[in-house]
Amino acid sequence: MENPVHNFIGGKWVPSRSGKTFETRNPATGAVITQCADSNAEDMNDAVGAAHKAFESWRRLPAPRRGELLFRAAERLFHEKETLARSLTSEMGKVLVEGRGDIQEAIDMAYYMGGEGRRQFGHIAPSELPNKSAYAIREPLGVIGLITPWNFPMAIPAWKSFPALIMGNTVVLKPSPETPYTAALFVKCLEEAGIPPGVVNLVMGSAPDLGATLVKHPEVALISFTGSKVTGGKVAVDAATHYKQVALELGGKNAILVMEDADLELAVEGIVWSAFGTSGQRCTACSRLIVHREVKEKLVTRLLDRMNTLRVGNGLDPEIDVGPLINQTQVEHVHALVKVGQTEGAQLRAGGHPLTEGPHASGHFFAPTLFDNVTPSMRIAKEEIFGPVLSVLEVNNLEEAIKVNNSVEYGLSSSLYTQDVNRAQHAIRELDSGIVYINAGTIGSEVHLPFGGIKNTGNGHREAGQAALDTFSEWKSIYVDYSGRLQRAQIDTN
Ligand code: UN1
Image (cartoon, rainbow, N blue to C red; front, side):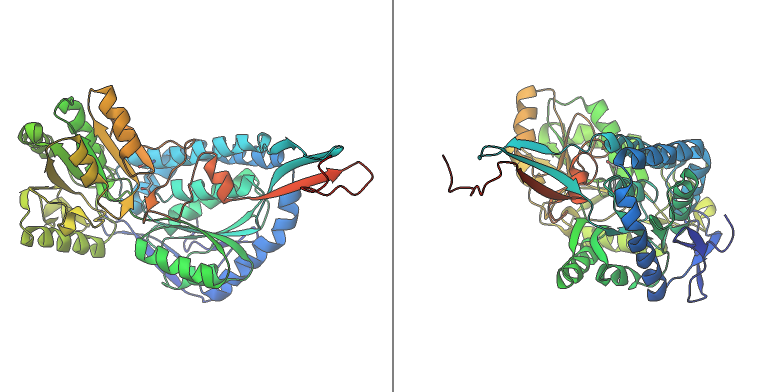
């Protein structure tokens, strides 16, 4: 793509009306990747206007035809997978195998939602009155604003765009200022797939209030937001004030529970992958290890051995297991919470500091960190850290483990390692989480099941799966009375 990268509005790549650009950098090296349009409210108005204009013809295009365009998009993404993954790793930092996974999740979602073009089933029910039919169908909402984070810079725009598009909505995507380039590459694939002008629009920018202009725009029907709890709260307030629908995906404080009968080798692999994969920067990342006291020391010893083998560095290097954090602010945030943990009396058993020497000198690296003897009331056991920091909490039995799991304000993903099917079934029922794993870590959701959480993780919506269709459509109930006479529901019962 050309440098600077422009916005994509009404089917054209156009510079910001502000005339300004901002740079996006590689968090592993500090190198500038490219300049991107630094948009203002006028650009946002243009984009919403284009989406509004495109809506009338897009919603009338038969859903199977819309689905075919999503299949084309899947093919484009598949064709470009390696290039996109490398670019994503350069901009976001996650190691290349995970970069490929991020693209694959977008491909999966394109195929899955493409198929929904021929499966937009509604309901047909018998009417309570004779010679009257009753059925319900889905309708699009209109223009949808998508505000996406940097940690899955391709997958999350895809999670939101594809269900929105298949239902007949048009979209304006406002990606995180940390990863605008990946979003632009995503939109380019959609353009190349033949998505008509105005159906997908991209507005990039670094101004903190750019998202708010999208939320407040009168022609936007729904905001789908993934990000922090604090920003999500503001989005919800703005959306409510402007009578908008809003779907929020916010934080997590996910736990892996390990019982005394668990396969510890297996558990260690799941813990390392869930806590230190993506450098802990997933909303599904495991940041609490709730372990039965009988196996705690054994598990922690094995975990420390395994952590010692983790190589931290530039994610483009195939030898590397853990990439950088997204920026220096995040390094400082993680470091500050680590210090809080130490002050509160938790025992630091590994890491605990930024990495700043040698190959780490120009990036935002943090050592994989393990805290032991953590109690549920400590801040490191309650607050989302979004970094490679794991806290070990010891418990006496499964009931206590479940209680500790459920004691936090979030409820996204929980996992239990046990060999006992009865305990597993009991935990599946009792864990306060939108996602539960048995004998697998807390990360790794698949696109055809609902994704999301309870409590402060969200506001009742789910992404992915059939549930995403509910977010991005409205139901219309239809009654056709062919009796030729007035029939009053609830009254004319004979
Ligand atoms: C996120 O961290 O915002 O289950 C999404 C997972 C991924 C998605 C994570 N499939 O970890």
